[in-house]
Amino acid sequence: MKKKTALSALAAILACLFLLVGCGADTVTSLPPLGKVGAPSPLVGLLDPDSEIRGVWIASVYNIDFPTAPDLSAEELKAQLDAILDNCSAWGLNTVFFQVRPSCDALYKSDIFPVSRFLSTAGELAVDPLSYLLEAAHRREIFVYAWVNPLRITTAYTDDPALPAGITDDMTVEYDGKLVLNAGVPAARDFVADGVREIVNKYDVDGVVFDDYFYPYPVNDDAGARVPFDDGAAYEKYGGGQDPADFRRQSVNALVKECYDAVKGADPDCRFGVSPFGIWRNSEEAGGAGTLGFEAYDELYCDAKAWVSGGYVDFLCPQIYWQLSTAATPYDALVRWWNGVLGAGDVDLLISHAAYRYEEGDWDDPAGEMKAQVEFARSQMAYRGSVFYGYDELKNDAAGVTDEVTEVYENEIVYLSPSSDGSDITVSSHENYASVERGVTELTGHSDPSLPLFLNGEPVGRLKNGDFSVKVTVSGGENRFLFTQHGKEFLFVLYG
View: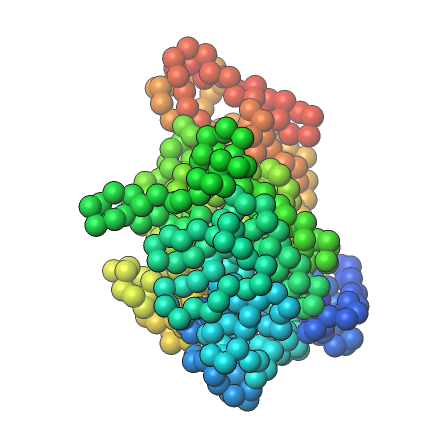
C-alpha cells in the first residue's frame, strides 16, 4: 500500500470533494522496505490506505490468464504482464490478485517450491514474473496481492511434478484424482505458512490472499454416493475425540491463523485475507443468510466467522457469484449478510464478482449487473472494494462487462471512518413491546455510524450512514432484543 504519487493523491482529494466523500487531510510517507524485490521507487510512496480496492483475479492455473502458454521467452512474459497492467489502468482498476502458487509450485523464485509447470516445463525461470509484475505495477500505482492456493498439490494433469522437498506422505491425501495437503496435520500447516512467509520476506507484495480451496469440494462416485475424504489417520492422531467436522474446521482455522501470523511477522503492513465461497451457511436459525445453496461451513469446513472473531484476517473477499435476481442465492442478501459479519470490527469486506458469467452465458440478461452490484455494495459499512473474476472476460469485454466496470470506476472513491452523528439507537420498523407474527421478522433502525453496534452480543451490519436492517426470530411469548453501542443499551421487546 505504498503506491500513490503526490499528483494522484491531490486528484483523489479533488475527486472526494466532488463526490461529497470525506477525505483525510494527512498523507503518510512510507519508504520501501530494504532487501525486498519489487519495492517502489522513492518517488512513489504517499500512502492512501482508504482508496477503494478495484481489482481483478489473474489466474495462472491451466494458463488461463498468465502466462498464456508455458515456456515463453522473457520478453514475451514481460509483454503479457505489461499488457495486463495497461488494461487494468485503462479500466480504472488499481489492484491485481496474481496467482503465484496454483498448486505446490511457484511463479516466483522460491527455495521451497519448484517452478510452476504452467510457466516452464523445464523448471527454469526465464524471468521472475512476480518480481517484474511488482516493479511494473507499482510504477503504475497498482497494488499486487499474491494469490496462493494453500493446499492443492496437483491438478488433474497426469504429469504434475514430483512433490516438493518437505512434503511427506503423511501430510497428503488423494481425492478425486488429485493430491492435496491435509490441513489436519500440523506439519502440513507449517509447510504452507513457510511458503507464505517466504513470499512476504522476499517480495514487496501489498497483500496475500487465499482462495476457497481448503478441504476439497466433495464429489460423488458412479453410484451417486459421496466419496469420503480419507483423513482418518490424522483424525486419530490429532482429533482428540472431537466431532470430525469440528476437527476439520479447527484445522482450517489453525492454518489461516498460522499464515496470518507468518505474514505479519514478515511485514506488519502486508495485508492477509481469504476469498471464501459466498455462502457460509444457509439456515437463518444457524446464523446463515437464509439462502439455498452449497455451504462452505459444512462442505469445505471453512468457518469464516471464526477467522473474523479470532482476529486473523485483514479482509474477506467472498465469492458472491450470483445475480441480484437469483431467487435461491440473491446477491444483495449475501452482501448484507457478510457486511453483518464484519460490521463491528476492523476486517474489510471486498466482494469477488462473477464477470466470467457474462461470457459463459449463465445469466440470461447480464446487462448492467456488475455496475449495479458494485453500487449496491458501496452502501454497506464494511465494504472497501471489489475484485472481478476473471481477467479474460474483461479483456474481451464479454457482453459489455468491461464497459460497465469502466463506467462505475470513472471517479475515485476514498473510504474513511464514518463520523459520529450523535444519534441514539432507534428501531423504526416496529413499536416496542408490540405483538407480531411468530417466525422471522426484520428490525430496521439507526445508530451512530462511528461506533460498532451489537444485538444480543452479535455484530449488526449497517449502511455507511448508520442505518441497519437485521433479521430476528420471534417465538411465542416475550422476545428480548438487546442492542448495545459503546456502553449504551436499548432493549427492544416483541411478543409472539
